[in-house]
Amino acid sequence: MIIRSKAPLRLGLAGGGTDVSPYADLHGGSILNATINMFAHTTIVPTKNGKIYLESQDLGISETLDSANYLEPDGPLALVKGVYNRIIKTYLKEPLSFEIYTRVDAPPGSGLGTSSTLVVSILGAFAEWLNIPLGEYDIAHLAYEIERIDLGLAGGRQDQYAATFGGFNFMEFSKEDKVIVNPLRVKQKYAAEIEHNLVLFYMGTSRESAGIIEKQTANITNSNLDALEATHQLKAQSVKMKEAILMGEIDQLGKIMHDGWQFKKMMANGISNSEIDAIYETAMQNGATGGKISGAGGGGYFFFYCPLVSRTRLIESLVPFGITVQQYHFTKEGLYTYTVNR
Image 1 (cartoon, rainbow, N blue to C red):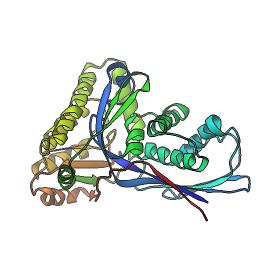
Image 2 (spheres, one colour):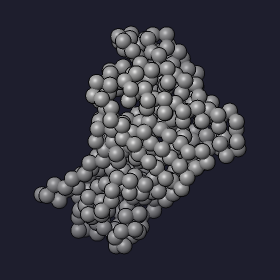
Image 3 (tube, helix red, strand yellow):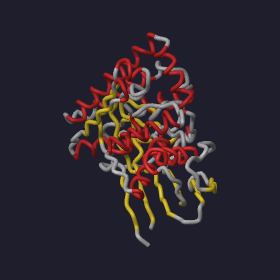
Image 4 (cartoon, rainbow, N blue to C red):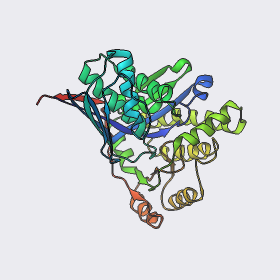
């Protein structure tokens, strides 16, 4: 028996940061995101040797442990251990013996929600193997609790839900971790136009999002008025983008992104830097009408909206910065799991 799962990564199009506590708890947040055809993959092979073998194929790291009810969630494989611990504690109450292999189609810290998406993928594989009856909201919320509470990792709430549900979604976040996912019925031609005009670049630098998120959290906790107002404006941007996409006013996305990027930089230090500012300015001079970094900021994936036929000129203008274009397509499906009997 082989159990496999995959969950899609996402582009955070608008409202990023409003899903982070304490802002979401105090004021409510909203985000618009869309999943793309880059995935977190998990394979589980059950064994009977009393061992647990963990392997991250993209990181080239592996670890063999004795089967136990609890694995110390340390090291680069902490996410896998954290999911296993919660599965045993909540559902099984007895240790398992297995091999688990994971890989993600984007580097850690890239801003596409890699860590949270991997947790969803791992959790989905265990649920498939053990026949645990979890719905989409159950999986997303459990993934959030594992990452944010059990493992104590800083971050927001959108990634787990995007990976689980898939597609274009407008998400609302409120007190007591309540989340409402509103799938958007985006016409195919609108999605195709967004995909054509939204150019995704990898900057070749990963960053630790937790540090930026901690600064953002501190600004809200300490009632930094500039940061608070900027976050309010980002929430408003998500509503504007939802309306523009549903009504087919696709070229409005550039302006919405541009305004959102100005507000996002006000949320915390480290979101932008001199190199990022130079890339953004060059893009705006060569056909882009707006853009933003996906995720907390500081590096990773950058995307720009390029209307009409400005896409090629924009790409050529950014060659001197050494950043590469990432080809992608939007996806409609979220977490997918299945079993192969050998």
